[in-house]
Length: 230
Image (cartoon, rainbow, N blue to C red; front, side):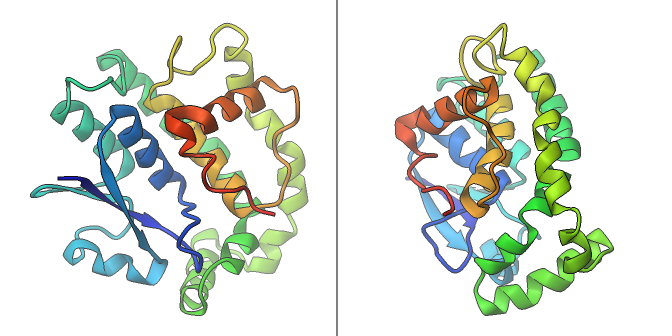
């Protein structure tokens, strides 16, 4: 039986965009596990699996329900130890926790500002009615006030990637010689931007760009199968 993944979409169900859902897509593909992707819009999330979580991703694996991308990865690692490892051991899982913290504290705040209007634009009307006030409340600013910072965030985004850029001088993946869940964490953030935003955040010839392109080609090109915004 295939694992069921509930993932976030806008008005176009063929363009899933959540960074956290993309982490799980890559983790499932890494494990070589068959899975079914079920599209969920913002206002449908409370109905997923009887309201098991306030957010997606959520997976159903037989009778097991798991929410939260990191918890899902840990579950897959424990439940399917015979499949390729997502962490490469306890140290790799601890490293991934650090990468998660770095991504969500450094990359996500900038991307929330850069892509805010563009995310709203790809939503169905009922989801737009939810998204705008919820994000204004979360950010403590109106959409227009957030937009005033957009260009500055675009111009400064490359500097936020400096730790990754420096590391890639000595190894091809965050995981070392091959990708691990830590790679999928950062990939999820950049894939989010790629799918929803026209902002040019990665430059040709940059080590991060080359790494991201390799990520898009992983697992049969599952990331590249969703075209970039444009």
